[in-house]
Image (cartoon, rainbow, N blue to C red; front, side, top):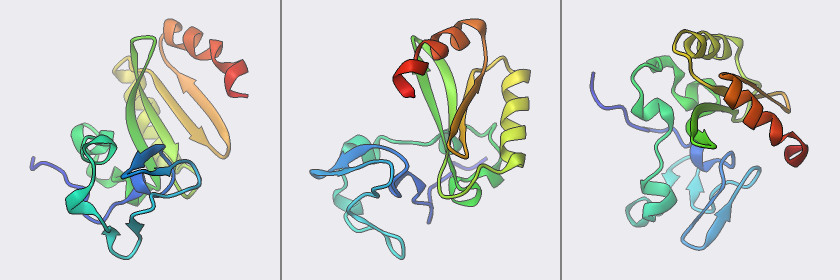
Length: 145
């Protein structure tokens, strides 16, 4: 399979992740200052190493995730993260309610492969995984709420 590319997808820049590019902060609800939805990144050639060049969503790097789940298609961002040295998949809504096909696929994938999974949907955060992951995740509840 050929290496995947972002193409016209800009979900990571649209205000669903946090970071700073060339002194301009972006975060939930505030897209990157340099993003033009019609043209993409206006500073693409000069974009910083971190977070722009170094960031790769899980869809880009994991061919086990189906082609149809490109973030711009499913309106969600898929990331690999760690919590107390335990890897997990994070699915974050990005512009629309999480599609049930996407969530079903990831839940089945996580269960089949003994993976930890966290997702956001309609304002809530949910997770499944190992007992250790669930315990670590539940410890964060008072902080998140």
